Length: 215
Image 1 (cartoon, one colour):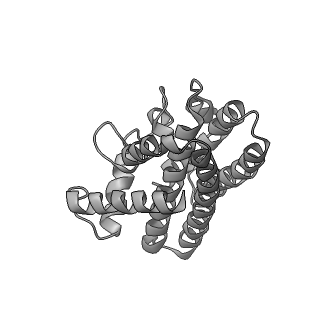
Image 2: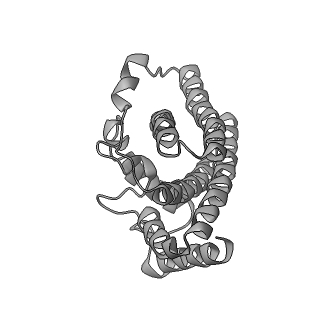
Image 3: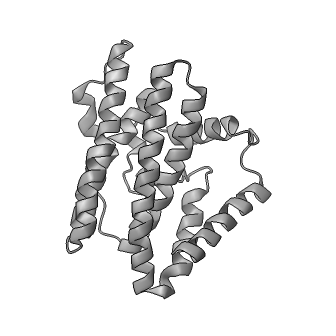
């Protein structure tokens, strides 16, 4: 799983190219993207270093196959997907930290989780600004948030799976996000067969309340 997380974090390189393209006129947001890119690549590199120390090398020649590109999309959709995606990653990394078999990996995932939460907070600020400028977009934001937060066959519910081809398709294990979601639910004490409807409804209701109150 560490290897798949390491490779998935590399998608920030290609996401940055697309974010700088799609938000070309938003200097404030592009400034944040430069910091976000540095921290996400730090995640990839520290996990590569960890893998090397335990005897598993990520060959540089394997990495270009993960490169992807996507056509420009609505800016508010992009912000929504990243806002939700960063929170989900933070939750998963926190769960992985709590269950890691040794202290170095626990510390790595603890730091990664904190980074993702900070990123989510900044995406929330930019999403709030976008909705303030276009209040009518809030229902669409909540619908997309619902899609992003749900996990099931054909929908890993993560931003790196939303392009065609996706970063998920290029991973050594293309079912990684489904498997990671199952592990996270297990570690979080949820049912092994998937998120029960009442819990999912409560999760989305909480997101909706936060969006209405905070955005």
